[in-house]
Length: 316
Image 1 (cartoon, rainbow, N blue to C red):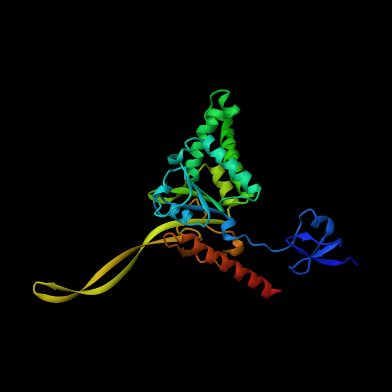
Image 2: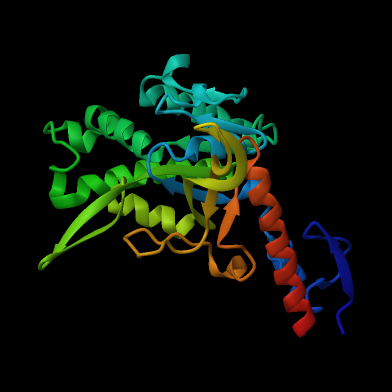
């Protein structure tokens, strides 16, 4: 019978033929363990996920993403400077005006990440739709397949141009994620009017090409919707009206920002949902205080992981 030996960080110690794993005592042959095969549960930390952050303009997407610890905002829209706290950002105001400028930045981030010297923990694209617009101009000026005949993205190869665009954008997202960064992909929603007979239905539409949105949806652990609402409180106050002292209601409206991680009411083209593995224990709505939004999400993410593991271990 082969000797069973514990491992540390997935790397086998000694010359045993198998390793004993924490999850259910399952075994991985030594040859495969040496090649990186493991069977140990390793939930993704909240600052290492890929999160899609969407919503209507002006609802708090940038503020939420900028509240993440160790974040660098890829501020293509040039809006993160309005955040009322200091946050690292790369934007046109700082001299990044072309895709070539962002590529230089990405190459440095990738190099440092692969070397274990990443100066940031997360990268927030604000927004991905603005980044896509910049990518279109870059490719139409530099991609050989497009420049050969002066084609536009939407004109080339009966739709092939959109796949050139998809591959360019998603390749950088994947490379930066594999270099060790958590990724937030902010993008806008817009209302879409649909006529159905005499009825008019309003639904949601992503401000992204479908091929890119499909990739975002597949890769993201969380699809989240940010919206601004108001908390209304009423109290009685005393007022003198016409010489009489009266008690009248006074209404106070306080802005409130929430993160939805379950499908939007009324449906739509955008499925706003986490992946199913933690969905049972994530609240449908998370309040995200200004400047502390990502901390609020992290607390709920960690709790969902704990409860999921507790449920699994309790059922064995």
